[in-house]
Amino acid sequence: MARILFTVRALALFSTIHIAMAAVSPPVTTFFPTIEGNLTKITWAHAVNNSTELNNALAKADIMMLEADIVLGTLNDDSSTEQIPIMGHPPANKSDLSLEQFINTVAANGKKGVKLDFKTTEVFNQSLSILAKLHKNMTFPVWLNADILPGPVNATANPVDARSFLTGAHKTFPESTLSIGWTTRYGSADNITEGTYTSGMVQRMVDIVSSSNITQSITYPVRAAIVVNSISEMQDLLNRTSANNPTLTIWTGKGDDIDTDKLSTFIKTVGVSKVYIDLPEHIIEKLDISGAMSLRLGAMTITALVLNLAIAMVL
Ligand SMILES: *[C@@H]1O[C@H](CO)[C@@H](O)[C@H](O)[C@H]1NC(C)=O
Ligand SMILES: *[C@@H]1O[C@H](CO)[C@@H](O)[C@H](O)[C@H]1NC(C)=O
Ligand SMILES: *[C@@H]1O[C@H](CO)[C@@H](O)[C@H](O)[C@H]1NC(C)=O
Ligand SMILES: *[C@@H]1O[C@H](CO)[C@@H](O)[C@H](O)[C@H]1NC(C)=O
Ligand SMILES: *[C@@H]1O[C@H](CO)[C@@H](O)[C@H](O)[C@H]1NC(C)=O
Ligand SMILES: *[C@@H]1O[C@H](CO)[C@@H](O)[C@H](O)[C@H]1NC(C)=O
Ligand SMILES: *[C@@H]1O[C@H](CO)[C@@H](O)[C@H](O)[C@H]1NC(C)=O
Ligand SMILES: *[C@@H]1O[C@H](CO)[C@@H](O)[C@H](O)[C@H]1NC(C)=O
Ligand SMILES: *[C@@H]1O[C@H](CO)[C@@H](O)[C@H](O)[C@H]1NC(C)=O
Ligand SMILES: *[C@@H]1O[C@H](CO)[C@@H](O)[C@H](O)[C@H]1NC(C)=O
Image (tube, rainbow, N blue to C red; front, side, top):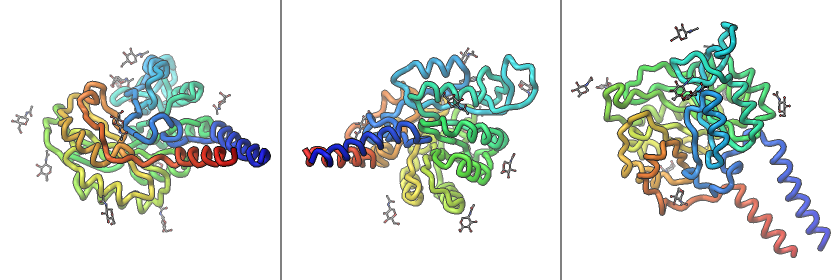
């Protein structure tokens, strides 16, 4: 009896150590078990694109994920004109923080996950060698994000090349979560107040995912004000990419007029185990998502339960 107990405990201990030491880019639900699979509980810091913003975000215990943009440019204090991946939002092409410094700082902290938003194919291609070099140290959730298809409403911005992005992310960082979305043209800057993600857009995304043979997890970033009009299209998208454990990540453009009643309904309908909410606090406050549909326990939670049960039975 004692021997069995010892074995079970040793196995449990071993698996814990193994996960703690080795797992590159663990799933968000594993890294942050306190959310108990309710993805809406994940908290975000936005535009973490210089050292001040990074240090501020890392110092906040209640922040879980850091969202940051990457462009090609030069470092402020560097006289070199060589263009490297730096943290910054277009049109910026100078920063006090490179992608490499950003990742090393997050790795040393060890408590947050990252969503790296690559703005062009060029900067993504040039970032792959950095990601490969730092791969082993990235033992926190890593999302690689890009807009890879043209989206609502008749968006004209150049998407990141879908094939280059999917192939590069898969080869260099197969553990990462792919965050792949559509470009958008919407809001006060574009004078557009009506929009939907159409079934045609969903179809093109499904096609590109299936033809790329990607098996890693996918989250689809969607713009709040638009996606509230596209519940059935989004359910169809999740349904048809079910092999990739798909989720949605809701974001917003600055100043977008979001119907928070419709957004609450959207989140409850799709389910809190399927939707991340990367929105400013003043919008989150207006949501009512309590009593959302039943929530599936994450695989890790179930494993832990089974293990506890096993120990209890031996005792
Ligand atoms: C970092 O960015 C914030 C927000 O854009 C800005 O207020 C701050 O001055 C910047 N700090 C540095 C060191 O560039
Ligand atoms: C960082 O993000 C803030 C907020 O989006 C923006 O105002 C600022 O220009 C950005 N800085 C760089 C270097 O991209
Ligand atoms: C960087 O941005 C500045 C200001 O927009 C621009 O004048 C300059 O040409 C840009 N540098 C490069 C290398 O693109
Ligand atoms: C990016 O890399 C892919 C794969 O190596 C290549 O096919 C593509 O032409 C590159 N694109 C740019 C803009 O560098
Ligand atoms: C990985 O992290 C360790 C410990 O902080 C550090 O010594 C090492 O240089 C890092 N590896 C790379 C490639 O930066
Ligand atoms: C988008 O394109 C469609 C079809 O060409 C057109 O009917 C519609 O007015 C356009 N909408 C906007 C906001 O540009
Ligand atoms: C925005 O669109 C409305 C209605 O389509 C139009 O009346 C108005 O002139 C437009 N404003 C600008 C700044 O383009
Ligand atoms: C996906 O797999 C199919 C069948 O094995 C193969 O023909 C195709 O070239 C693969 N596509 C990519 C992008 O690797
Ligand atoms: C998902 O697809 C299956 C099979 O095509 C279908 O039976 C089911 O109703 C779909 N579910 C949703 C939520 O669309
Ligand atoms: C999920 O989390 C949100 C935010 O904390 C909460 O309002 C909601 O009731 C939770 N839903 C479930 C089903 O646990």
